[in-house]
Image (cartoon, rainbow, N blue to C red; front, side, top):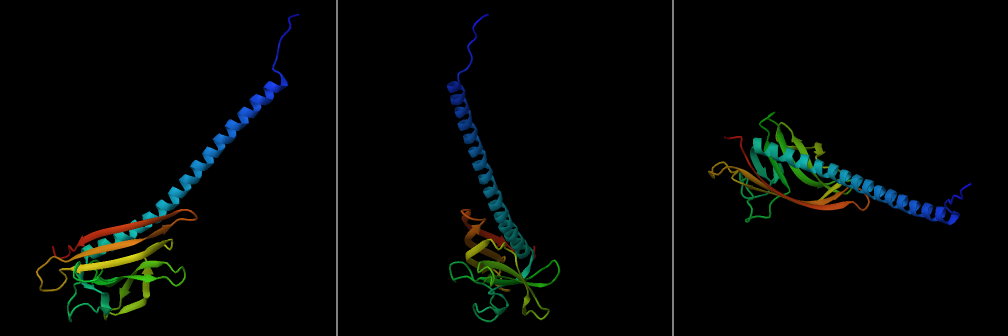
Length: 197
């Protein structure tokens, strides 16, 4: 009979320990990758909502008419002045306009939510007499978004100024998609009104 050598107990223990270390490291890496993927997905969902709200607002402004900086309770300029142009005013956190889609009056405004204490953008439907109906105001931004600074600047909205109406929108805030998943953002856009074209 030939004498056959096998693995010793020490060799088996060393190989088992090395295998365990490799498996634990691999599982830890998979866990980290999965957690990072969930964080990115949650943040993307929140920022997609912000993108949708901004796009909805700009589309309504682009196709609307009769823009008034400051909304229906405007205190800008003299009677009948609808402008608050960039560079010559502090802007406004509210604008109102008429929707050419359904003929309704719409007001966009920046307000603080009483439940979450986050600042949000609201879309309000005006009454037939052009008054603000606060019961018809709904938030168009996600509760996980806190808009810390928001301004509209309107130029060309006065009836006889000979300019094409345009609105500049400046927005800053923080998107919060969970613990340790907070992302600041800043958005700046310009919308030219197309209703008269």
